[in-house]
Picture: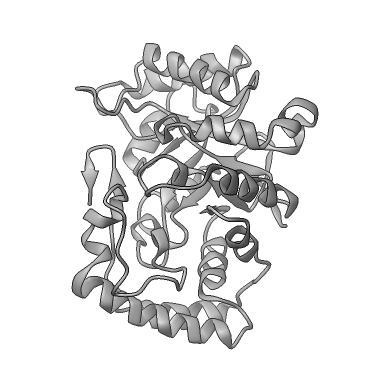
Length: 321
C-alpha cells in the first residue's frame, strides 16, 4: 500500500482511505459484523487512514469497535479522520460555531474511544460563521491535544482561502472534495488553490457512489433509505448513458488485467493525494486496495472515453443534487 504525507505537518497516511459513509443510514441497511470485517480487512491490507463523521450516525462507534485493539495498543498504526460542523434536523444544518464544534469533537472522542483525533475536518462550510472563528476553534482543538491535524471538506477555493489565509494560516492542512470520473468540477475549484498552498487533498466518492463499480445496471433498484433512490444520476437517461461509458472503461481496464473500479481509483490517485473508498464487505475492499498505476497515455485515453459523460452531483446536508 502506497503512502503519502498530507499537508505541511507530517501526517503520513495510506493513499487509499477507508470511508465509513456507507454505515451512516443514508445508503440503506448493512450487516454490522460484515462491516467490521471489512474495516479489519482494510487494515490488514495496509490501509491506515479511516474517514468517518459525526453525521454518519453510529459509524464512529462502529469504527472504534472494529479497530479497538489498534486504538488501545498500537494507536500510531491507524489514522482516524472524522468530520463535524453539521446538525441534521435543526434550523441551522451547517453549524461551525465554537460551541457546536466543541460538543462534536468531544462526542467523536467518546464514540471512537480515543483521547485524540488524528485529523478533524469541518464537514461543510458554514456561511454564517466567520472564517477566522472557524480557524481559531480548530487551532484551539490542536493546542488542547484533542486533534493532531485540521482540515475542511466541501469548501470551494474562496471558502478555503478565507479560512486558510487568516492569522492562523498554518491550521488548515487538508481539504476533502467530491471527485471522480463523472464529477470533475474540483479540477477547476479548489484543486489549483490547494496545490498552490500545499494543502493535502482527499477525494471522496472515488467510485462515483457506485457508478464506477461495474455492479450497477439500468435495472438496479435502490432501497428507499438510500439517497441514490432520489438522485437523477441513478435513473433514466443519465444513468443509461453513463453506464455505457462505464462499459467502455471496463473494457479498457480489462486490457490491463484490472476491473473498472480499480481503474477509477488509480485515475483518482493520479490526480490527488488520497482516494476515499467505502466497502461493506471484505471482498469489496480487497478489490479496491489496488496497486494499479496509469501512464500518461492511459490517462489521456480515459479522458477521451469519458469526454461525453453526464456530470453528476451528490448528497448535501440540505438534500440531493
